[in-house]
Length: 483
Image (cartoon, rainbow, N blue to C red; front, top):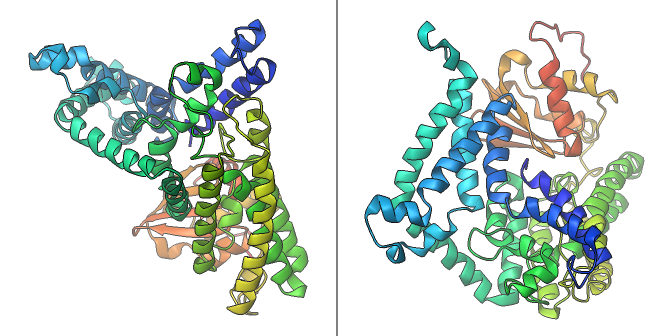
């Protein structure tokens, strides 16, 4: 999520630029050109931003040395695998170099290099060399090791990348060839993969230039993309547009249904959760706080949500109601995209959204009542104590509560966070009290393997993770009160 977090900057810069000059993409306004070019500087370099951002984000202490290593590794790999270098290394004619190497500068390679760089940093950043080489000890050693790892990666990819790239392209083209139906299928699996965070891997195929689709950058390119022949009005943006009715209207409708079906004594508490989560979904397109409020409590209902998302994307693509985003399908991105020449009949997405608000409300309310689903505020009496957040309002104290509920510093090998989740590695996962975590405000707890745990907190996750890291290992948590 670190590199993805740069996209809103690009969206804002390019969105304002297109508001000023929607048809000339800067040709008629120096200010518009300035803003559009500034945004394009981010979009056009997403592959290296993934290498740097993933390396930084997955490093154990978010250190700049990890980010530098990601950059170094990416330069080594992409340079060695450039068409000219491949021709020279393999001793073949440049025209005989597989076309896959012309696309080596992509997000897939950036993510791969970033992961390897972070792993090298986490393993070797504390190594102490002999005194004669002491200058290169610790964090200074990491970029050196990463450069050698880059050579190894490049050697392997030189032989397997054409097959990997061909597979990705065939997959993308297969879905793309299905047109609107393919867009709907993509959206369905996009939602289904959210519980384990693997939707980002799927998104990279359709939203970026892994398989030649590149939906987000091509959309943000506007008139320039049209002129270059990489974008088509009514088509480019089809993997984004249908999410607006879901995130801005559908999920808030589900939130209203969950509030209305909650027990009378819990309505006030449920309302506070649903209003905050619904507003986040509508305004920014951040849906995880709301989705995690019911995906584990009512899995069947979550599958219905995924199916409705697929239907929405299919309808928008079929009708060529198009808008795009730089971050997510919320109100902010919709407003910014309205002057983009690739935004076709974008206002109809609002009409579609109102329909989906009613659909979500009616379906969620009917299914919850008919099958007596234990959505927030409907838990059995012996479970209700842990159904609503009762943690401290002060972030530092809340971090101590979470730390204690997870078994203390002694049980935590690694503390990390993305936009909405604490990502933790535990020595003994049985010491983590899931009921207490939910009572503190966690919307979900995901166990990955025997020692990895994700605690869904919403936008507060990164702040809580930072506060947890600040708590001294020696601090006594026995006086910290838990619900």
